[in-house]
Amino acid sequence: MLLSIGMLMLSATQVYTILTVQLFAFLNLLPVEADILAYNFENASQTFEDLPARFGYRLPAEGLKGFLINSKPENACEPIVPPPLKDNSSSTFIVLIRRLDCNFDIKVLNAQRAGYKAAIVHNVDSDDLISMGSNDIDTLKKIDIPSVFIGESSANSLKDEFTYEKGGHIVLVPELSLPLEYYLIPFLIIVGICLILIVIFMVSQLTSSRHKSTIGRAKNH
Image 1 (tube, helix red, strand yellow):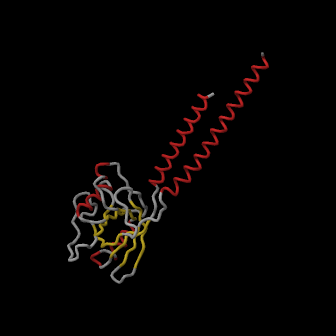
Image 2 (cartoon, helix red, strand yellow):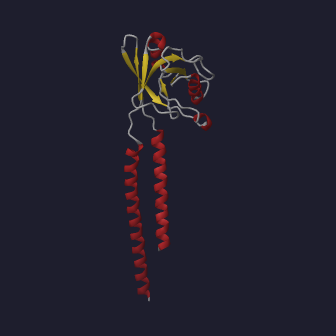
Image 3 (cartoon, rainbow, N blue to C red):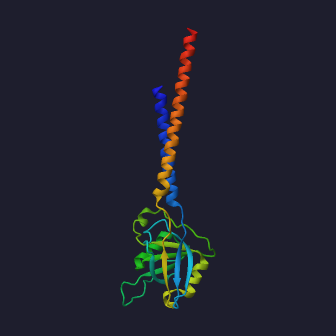
């Protein structure tokens, strides 16, 4: 009897652990769309959707304001031209990079090494948004700057009107998402209650079965 109950408790604990880990992994990788606010030299604005990368630093809560520069070379698969020098050394520059030819993490790392504070990678022949990731742990450890992904149409509009050379500037706005705890804690409570009820029910069934078996043996004697 005690062995059966112990096995039930162990199984319930294993199920609880597996469900918790799976939910945590899912929520951590769940892409959340954010925005790029772009302003031209006349201070007219336009908004573009982006998707933050799953590596590097997160954008500050107030957003990141800076001047947009086209990457040279465009794919940033090798060291790129650094941002222009300005009298105000505190100026922030953000680089626009073309997708393909090498991994996302290499592109962003080259942007960081050139002195850019953030990177925007754009799609090619598509406006689909991709959640940028990487499996290269060594490279990921070196990346400190935030990066986002945008579609090709957004990239073309940014190049046409909102770059540093054209007198524009942009603001990378962070995604508005609730902390993981808002999802995880209610889930853990509900699953925990369900597992406790399952264990109670199973123990009750085992006890009832054992009781009936005892009565049956007594009648036979």
